Length: 331
Ligand code: FE2
Image (cartoon, rainbow, N blue to C red):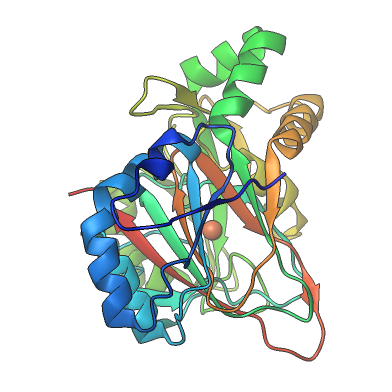
């Protein structure tokens, strides 16, 4: 259930009283801020309070602010003074299109494709710590963004399946992705290997993979099957809690449909198979801590990528769903 709270005046202490049960917290434009420069002034004054709100709740939704263009959104996200995490330098497997240097499309996967819960880029050694989403236009039907508290998932696994959890923690996870020869828009993970690795040819691709400690196999059609080294399955948060920080649900539920992949999308860090019962149980636990964010035009959501997973429900109808993204790192 989404609980709501309003910002009455600048420097209001009301946000400070919010608890972690408020997820996501919602901040309405009750000040009646009319344009992006008023919004940026307000954000600049309030950024430490807003960041505290984010660390308590894991996700903050800004509703009713006049954010109309990618440029407005760029200014909005810049006001928090995080570092820019660029799509180019990332090893993300999603196909995206830049709108401004720090803003790009969320994912070019077609409407009927559901993108399952994940921590952004947790299947690679480099990931953003914060994600801003902005809805320029909601879908006619569907298209909500599910948000899930992974610290709650961790707590539940610790209570109910401690042996599984300790295996995840001691071995970590390895991910295998198929990077196409060129970008394929008809997939949630269709970014080609040249773009993903920022290289032009196979030799440079292999150099890059060696640096990253990946293993790989070239396919006959020119695509690249790449496997990560063991990556951690959990991470510690600033408040001392642990988050079940990984890409296991999306890899299991979303990537397994790639018929051309000979290797499983995710294994334990030693290459051991993960039982389907475990994967389904984790997926079901995550559902219990998930809220669907139903977008309205102009909404901006700030998500703590280490604490909260996100995804994208499928959508339909004549209206183009336009959700754009900006990724950030702590500096
Ligand atoms: Fe994502």
